[in-house]
Image 1 (cartoon, helix red, strand yellow):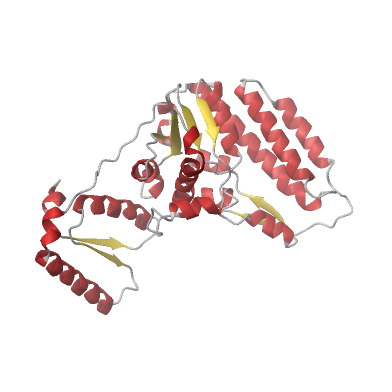
Image 2 (cartoon, one colour):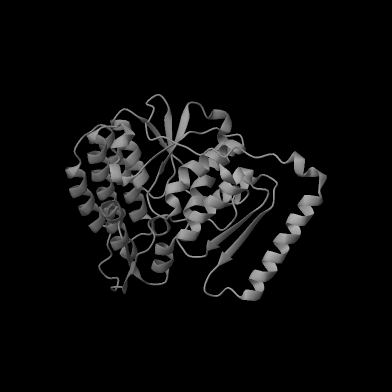
Length: 334
């Protein structure tokens, strides 16, 4: 690469989401290429003042001069810059799936129904961010850091038991960092000692490149829409339940039932009819109707309870009834 021949490099980026988030990935690659050689970065938006830009440029020039006088410049060592991943699932290895939402359970079940081994990682918590913050810049999007932290938590807290595993991460085309999750996470994990292959795929291929067959697409879609329906019931009933906690327990019970049916490639229409009746039986008819609010937004943030600080429950505790845009909407959109 031509950049490797440079003695110094100034990187200018337009500070604009989502492009800026993806440009962070480019910065990491440039840091690896340049090693210890001077690398300057300017982040510019419509609010950038000329004086601040001049100050940054003057500081960069000072860095270049200091580096030129340093005897250590000959010792500069570049890091491995390779990034790469595949989408071909190995049936002999267990896929580790970050838990964005309960939908991960039925996706894992669909994979197992089609011959793969899959394990859903524990629900995200503060430890995930504590781990990932040690190896990220802090400017990356939250879903990237949370999912990376889920892999890191597993490695640090249960690494001795990890054998024949590989990660799974969705991807996308376009400016969003999601298209870079897998390749950047592979590299970071390798640097901390966790040599984890990560399989990724995008909707453009209808997920066929996973090599799981058309049954996977059908089973996963049915499972995702089923969990969407369960969540809709949960959010409709929980604010009015006779006894606190019953709706959550019923939701978990039927999520497991649906996942088990999918794993066996069995129909579950009877389960869906049954769960509707059971949820209705939890309602206290004497409770007054609450104001209804809707939550929309980025798919991971609106779906991951840790990342949004359990916003649905916060709203319910404040006297509201909530409905959230379903995961199936995003799948259909992509």
